[in-house]
Length: 519
Image 1 (cartoon, helix red, strand yellow):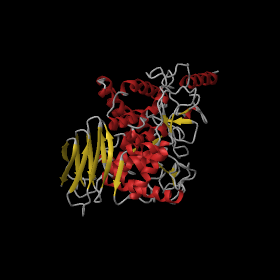
Image 2 (cartoon, one colour):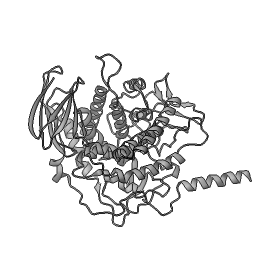
Image 3 (spheres, rainbow, N blue to C red):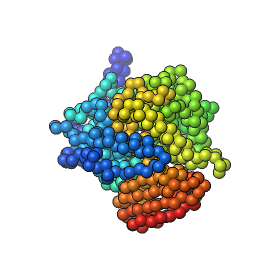
Image 4 (cartoon, rainbow, N blue to C red):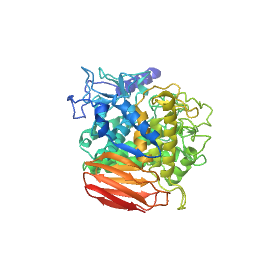
């Protein structure tokens, strides 16, 4: 009888998690689709930001290849679909995926004036359950959830808030925040209730391989370092959005909750001896397998300076993550590592590379010495090594791939071709931000530029906020020479320039054409 009661309770809890009352999208204000055209690449190429890299025409070629593929994946909802917005999709399935879509937005935001890709998230929001649940994969034609092998695998990394804020940083448009905050808050409630295992020592969050987006990665435990860090990232970005729309009490609540989760991550998941974050079991015992999941605490603001420096050692180690094409999903010195990638037991993926590079961007100097390299310099070096690998495979195959081998200078196995898809992140997002060194703030009309190259480089027609700007640094003889910067802009903005990581100089740029010399 006792066993029967336990089974009935378990069934009731499981059913309630995924109960579809038929009330979908009630927390999202957009209810119907409004017709909008789909832009073509050929007609819009001249409107996109155009990078200049005198010494790396290969990167520029890869950049335009990525955009040409991306335009093939801008779509209308199918006839009869309950979707409410045009969207970008990954192109290999009749479904949309949370994980894929969110990372596609990281590069697509640089073409926001042509196609507002952030609206792709509307089609997840409008299919949210009354209890807050949002399935990781939703069929485009019907709007029905697609469940591959079980509902427990249908929660993807909770990154909606991060994507909304990252889009805002380029567009400067916070008009979405009022509409999306109620959706993400309700989703957070569901995650708090159903993605914490009861009666654990750590009280952190769990996922599965498929749910985490890293299908066959050899991870286990009831506390996952990536999922728990992603919850912190979600709350920090929810707090940011709430501040922007004057919900300050809510923002304070989310910031406090993010801090509490961070404390538990560092208490239970950080291993000082190894200098790494691990998953934990019910009793808080660490599962010591080194995967890319262990780097999420940098991006989420969980790791402090010391912990970030320890994690950097692993990223720089050729025996673990610093491979021919960085960074493999599983450290090369783990026994299950495969040099062909074999999906997530070694494969190099755009999503986790973006996470690592953007995590490095949260930190500055390594150690106290002014002669030490910076996290920024390593992020640039890693990006260039990654792009070098992508370009060499592109030369062989004529296209971009879903994932790559870390060692064999080839596509991963298995791997989808013509994949943009998130692979556009490297040639577009990371090229602009970590090779050219530009970081726009469209909300405040600020452009930060770390000038580290000596060739003629920059970008034409970069759009952020209501500014359209061309910024070009002329060729220098060496890194110690001053930088001559040419600027053409339609609107006033603030340009904050540092040369090779030295002291920042703030320039107030007026409409028109100007030249500056920066020491």
